[in-house]
Length: 125
Ligand SMILES: [Ca+2]
Ligand SMILES: [Ca+2]
Ligand SMILES: [Ca+2]
Ligand SMILES: [Ca+2]
Image (cartoon, rainbow, N blue to C red; front, side):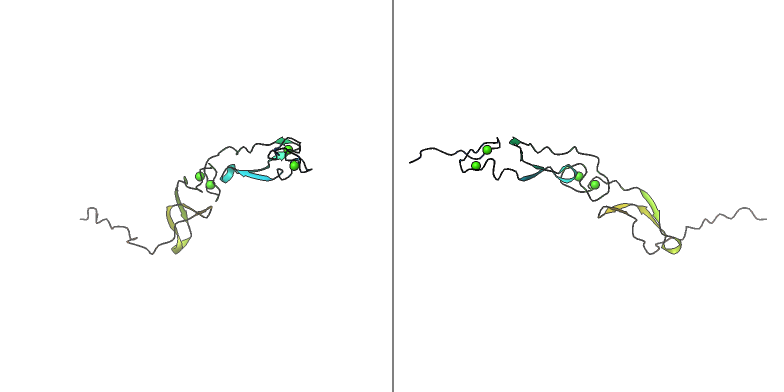
């Protein structure tokens, strides 16, 4: 009886587990990193192991993508004063990032929009 201990198949171009195929099952796609840093590589190419190295983290912007690769999407978005709409629908406030898109704050019913009247009647004689 053959007495050998097959090794686990490793990425080396050899048939480590002695089943007639070299590096079988190792040329699989591997994904690493999260968000924008996610990479998908083939773990074994031509007998050479390929390390999956995540991409470089970027700056979080409002785009529905986890640019800085911390697992949260658009979490660092800083709203900025903005105005949108026209006429009675005009609305101003702080922009928001919803679903990867800048959104204008929802128009609200006018609340005390009437400017406080200055009772400043200048000198009449
Ligand atoms: Ca094999
Ligand atoms: Ca092998
Ligand atoms: Ca993030
Ligand atoms: Ca983002």
